[in-house]
Length: 163
Image 1 (cartoon, rainbow, N blue to C red):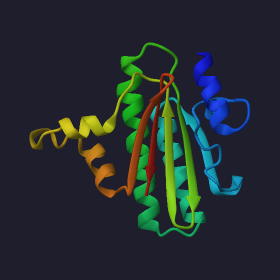
Image 2: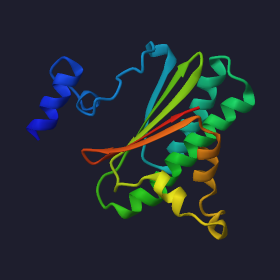
Image 3: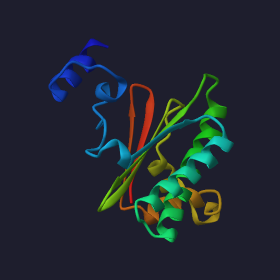
Image 4: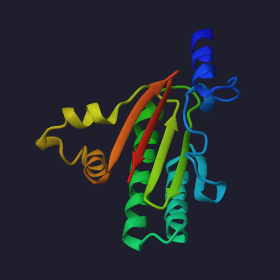
């Protein structure tokens, strides 16, 4: 475990103080606190509430209703899939941490969970036209997002969606 900590400390230019620094993830994505929304969910109900909060957050930043709704739908789809599939497969205490970042030219959704590894891109590649209904959520997010990045770092799934 010493090597990842040392590598992250050198990469960050300072000693590692928290998990985001260890994972070498941008702490704030270069925006102020008022341009970020952070929450954690562990039930479908809380995921729906987080999605609604994201919708309100995006609208407050001046995004159009339809665009804000789509971003909220992405978040709800991603988090509910994690809760429905990842929590069931993993007997431990699970959580999903969400960060929504508003920048004038993009919105970033970062979803991090401690469930079993799951790369949605691999799932999308394995889906067939016959299973399109089962994979509709993943297919929709991938078809409408500008960039999607998945990493599994130190047992955490980190999905970053730029829209």
